[in-house]
Amino acid sequence: MSMPMLGEKFPQIEVQTTHGPMKFPDDCQGKWTVLFSHPADFTPVCTTEFVSFQKHKADFEALGCELVGMSVDQVFSHIKWVEWIKEK
Picture 1 (tube, helix red, strand yellow):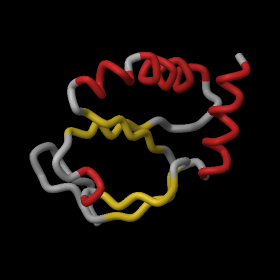
Picture 2 (cartoon, helix red, strand yellow):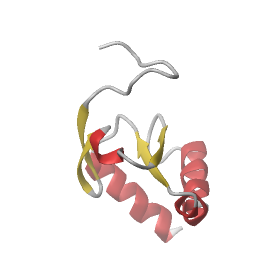
Picture 3 (cartoon, helix red, strand yellow):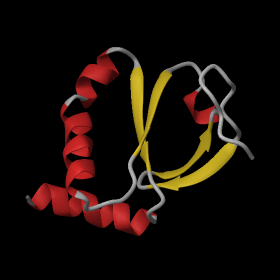
């Protein structure tokens, strides 16, 4: 599978998330979705960007837009990262 380019249809994929399984693009039908990626959990820049998205989540929702973050890390790592962020 090649990397989709801007304007091309998003490929059909199934992923595991911290909120359960998700199917792209089916689960995003009828709403705007910002799919953002980061290289790794627990890194300083990724953490500040992730927190910034969280701080503006209500603004995105007011526009009818869902935020979905992804990386190569496992779901368990994401859960621990979110817990770590909340502790800080």
